[in-house]
Amino acid sequence: MGEPTRVLLDESRIPRNWYNLVPDLPAPPPPVLHPATLRPVGPDDLAPLFPAELIGQEVSGERYVPVPDEVLDVYRLWRPTPLIRARRLERRLGTPARIYYKYEGGSPSGSHKPNTAVPQAYYNAREGVRRLTTETGAGQWGSALAFACGQFGLACEIWMVRASYDQKPYRRTLMRVHGATLHASPSAVTAAGARILAEDPECTGSLGIAISEAVEVAGQHDDTRYALGSVLNHVLMHQTVIGEEALEQLAVLGETPDLVIGCTGGGSNFAGLAFPFLREKLAGRMDPVLRAVEPTACPSLTRGTYAYDFGDTAGFTPLMKMHTLGHTFVPDPIHAGGLRYHGMSPLLSHVYELGLVEAVAVTQTECFDAGVRFAGAEGILPAPEPAHAVAATIAEALRCAESGEEKVIVMSLCGHGHFDLPAYERHLAGRLEDFTLPQERIDAALAHLPSV
Image (tube, rainbow, N blue to C red; front, side, top):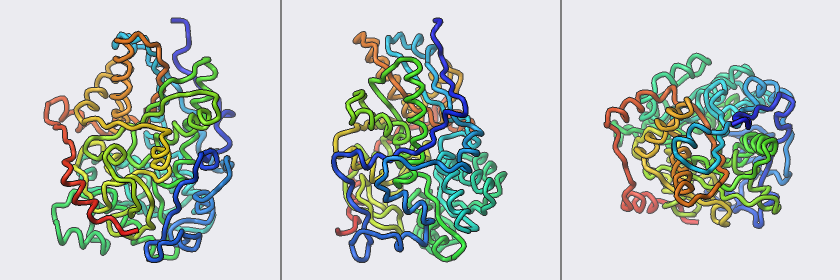
């Protein structure tokens, strides 16, 4: 019991570089294609949406990209984040496994999302952009970008998926505290949203629809660009500060992980933790299993098709080869709103196809049960998204209790659930139901995949 439970690093240990996995892969990922020509997109194709520096990072072949001093200065508000041994949870589970969680809930918006929101706002401001548009599911990304825009003097306009807009009023308040303009999506503000509302006035929305709305507005104004909270290479790269810190913290303890676990919606949280460990695995310095966890209601990795598809519902984006349920797919309004995306990061999808990571899907009830169990033991209430990782971690720890294996499990606890208490209240009252996506809904959406 004399061993440390919490490993903290001082400010001097904030990673000075983001890690780009692409140069270390055994095969390069497929190119992003222009939907009209089916040729690889170039910088000019992306310039209406992103600043030049982020476009460069998106296609970079460099293994490491320096973190600007101005970004590090904002990171110091919450980074480095702690790595915590879940001793009380271990005891309650009766497991010989050693469970560690990397806690990102101490950031200004309560999740991992500012790790990329801050550099995206910084690079846009440096190029003279005045406003950023974006989508948000559960509101974690929207609140992170609103905070980051406030740090660099940018206006921020956000389309929030209608299901989460209704379920999470305090996320809306937090975004407005930071000065953001907010719309429920689909909205009548855009042509894309108006078309969907005309077809279905009660549409609960999707991240694909919200992306279409944000991209549409960004493309109409010269002083406006679009920011994305997950999926793209540069976003995943910014999140690798999580895994880089975790590697150093485990080294302090003399621990090597057997299993690394994170929830996946678009892929940034899981990649942020797992990719630095994958680098070490590819180099032969360790050999952990890397396990992505997604909801049974939106299982893009475990049941989606690996194909070229649009990143949004209206078809405004380039074509990306990824695991997808189809860009017209509208997920069931589960409470893990941050995991309700029809596709998966192209880079993470490629890594999955190479067999370098694995994926499982879990039900909503299992996740909320795990969240309550974790809070009772460790005192931190997970957001519904990382509760998926908690559920998978508990399941593995219980298997270790049966087998006697002393596995080292490292989990990403990417955000707290303080704004998700209404969902937990419904769970405690027995009013949340599990939902496993019927195959016919997947088939119907995949019928609209573009021909490539």
